Length: 174
Image (cartoon, rainbow, N blue to C red; front, side, top):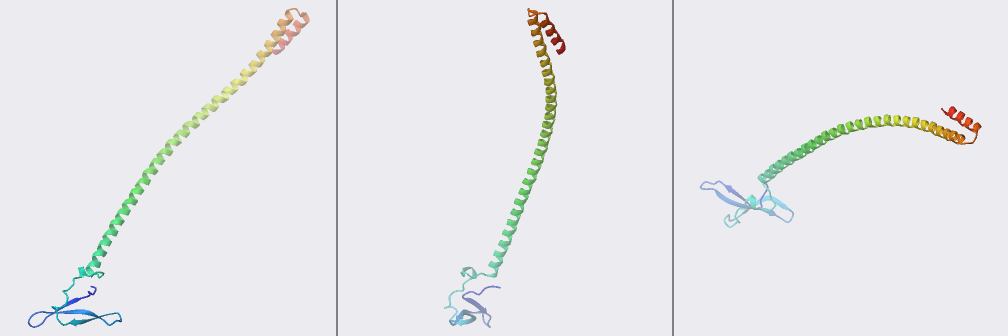
């Protein structure tokens, strides 16, 4: 429904031509009354004020127009929101795919590293065994060298008994 203007113009049909009567709302100091009071001279009354010029009073067309603009604005805002949400979802899907690819790459690198660790551990075990064997051979060689040194010392003139003891010691270490 249209809101009331401060001044309204009422055109009433008559026998000869349409007559114009102007009305103004009554105010008895107790609030506003919507009952119009006729103004004597329509020509003396202020010119009719259109709805567009009345401050603070909206017509149904204005309300409907604002409602339609708000509805269109809300639809556009919802469309933008859905588009933003879709872009965010697409970004998350791309990130998930990238992370899955990275995870596969890292899993392959971990597998290769574990294979290398296994090879290194096996080589380390072999080297430790070889080091232990070489250590035993070195110990035997050191004892033989000591025995030979004693044999040479005995042969150099320390006596026959000492030579025989050094030879027996050398045979025992062999």
